[in-house]
Length: 413
Image 1 (cartoon, rainbow, N blue to C red):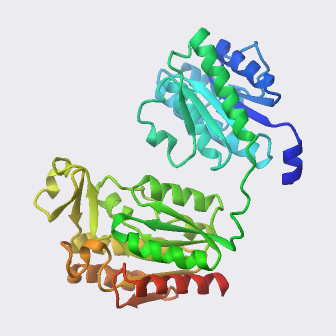
Image 2 (image 1 turned 120 degrees about the vertical axis):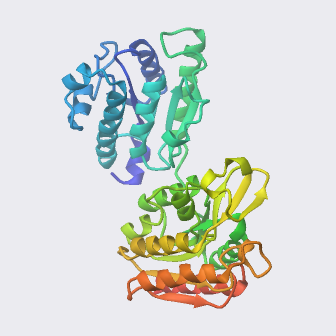
Image 3 (image 1 turned 180 degrees about the horizontal axis):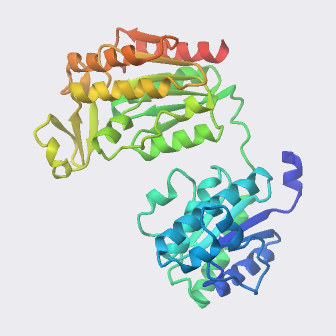
């Protein structure tokens, strides 16, 4: 189905949730969606039964079949956590298949704690840009881990999803209107007249470099999307790379690797620096800000690091200087990940400092420690991957221009 045909046909909304315990609420949501003139696919994630009040397109039995558990086993287990995890896992697989067949345009879920977890888990299979909304009793809690890097809209239900009343009816109707309205917004298929789209990672300590790089790339007609390397930024960038949003990655700020190693607050998890390698798009990688690990207020720094060199970047941000041992591990980890790249890779090493605070005047200035990182990268990297040693600080214009030049050579090569 091409894009013109998809704009002509009626929009289709995927409605998912536990129809066994929330049947009345989902019937009302179903009716509200139909009133908006859309088609509805329904997916039941409730293992104890279903609803006869509206058509159920995909049963809980079908979802269970996508896991290593049968529906009978899930019904009999007394472990609620297992049920929630498996139904979310199975629903995600079914949703991925529906998407591959272009069966729906948006998704809406609804529920309490368990239903919300299942809905958010299932929605991880839906790429950014396809509308997804969850009306939830726990929408005001910290659900950052469950939402992950996805553009899921959380809407508080205010009252429990446990039978209709004047508040729940109002909010369910509004949720239906919101999800249908989002499907009517035309997609931005191309930004202005860009020749390509570049992802770039940045941090306060590398802002100058990223600003110069972004300006140079935009002058050449590229769209540049910057991601703040605070954990969720790196996760989002990696997710969008896998979803095919980018033509190349300019990974100036890989600091999240250090936080993952030392339990900092800006970890993007073990998959950071893997997406571009797996997808095979060009990437220029810099060990930007690997001289630091990020923690919150000073009293939140783990006890084992209290005696280390610490610096208050802000009242609620404490930086710890990485040491030689950590830099060996980080250099080895970077090399191992980049050695698996299916596409072109280049590594740039700024010899005069890898962050604002590791310049010659900076509090983290320690060139011998940085050299351990650089040497490990050079020792461990595949000989076919070029390593450029630039006699400049990461925020010098010379370094930024070299990074852009090398990336453009890859793109135009």
